[in-house]
Each structure stands twice: as C-alpha cells, then as structure tokens.
Image 1 (spheres, one colour):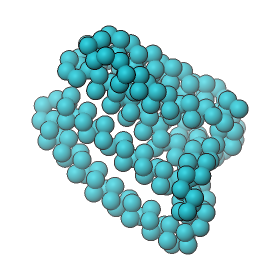
Image 2 (tube, rainbow, N blue to C red):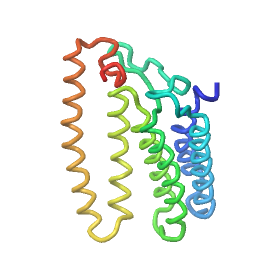
Image 3 (tube, helix red, strand yellow):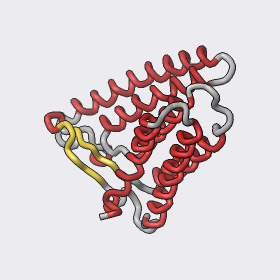
Length: 204
C-alpha cells in the first residue's frame, strides 16, 4: 500500500508545503522558512524511502510504484505515474536540490519571502511531475505549470538583467512547448486516438 502511493506522497508533499506557506502570516519569515525547510526535508526523506524500496534487479518501470487513474476518459487521458532506473536518480536529486535551495536562500531572500518559498515549493512539485508522468498529456501539463514559478523566480529574485532573462526564458520555452504540444497531438491522431495514444509506455 505504501509502495503504490509513495509517488503520490512525494509529488504532493511540496503542494502541502506551499499551502502551509500561503496560510502563514507573511511577517513571520522565520516560521515560513522553517515550514518550507521541514517540508523539503520530509520530501527528500520520502525519495530515500523510494530508493530503499526500488528493486534494482528489475528493468523498466516498477509495477509496485505505478499509479494510473482515469483523468479525462473521453480522450483516454490518465493520471499515470511511474519510476524506473533513469527517473529514480532525478527524483532523488530533485528532493536534495530543493532542500539545499531552501537552506541557501535562508538569509539571501529579503523581499516577498512568502511568495518566494511558495513558488519554490510549487516548482519542486512540478519538476517531480515531469520525471514521474507516464501520460504525455499529464507530462505536458506539469511541464507548462513548471514554467510559471520559474518565470517569476527569475524575474523577481534573479540577478542582474533578471527581467530580460525571464522574458527570454519564457519565449524560448513557450515556442518550444507549442512544438511539443503539436507533436503530442500528432501522436494521438496518428495512433487513432485509442486508450494507448497518450501512454508513454505503450507508445514506446
């Protein structure tokens, strides 16, 4: 039971953290930072649990961790998650990296602290989603949502020429995302719009 829900726990833990940040008063900066740090530590711990339960002798997606729930049945779109030997280290590194980001920005972020940590936690969840998604449409949703916190993190808290960098980042990723969406829709129609048309595993 834990194994089948572990990816869900990892994916949604940062969202819980983000909600907690948004519910806290913005003048309590230490409380905001502490809550965000505790959340990322817990999330990283869950990725280590995933590693401990991962069977390294089995190739491909591990059935014990796979999640598949119908999302938009009319178009055969599913909330489908999974992990294999390639995505596992990326998931662990994401958990570690964002915990280190919280620590490294502890004294560096001076303005809009509440918004910064809320966006950072949202970004972590969407990055997890990109690495876990086994449905092309779900992957695209996480990819697109990931761009929003990235845009604001760069544009508001970035370094020199941050506005220019944020706009350039948005334009590159926006046009790239359009091409990716065209490819995903093309795959859907090329395969006849069947139940497997958005499944990354079945299409591969």
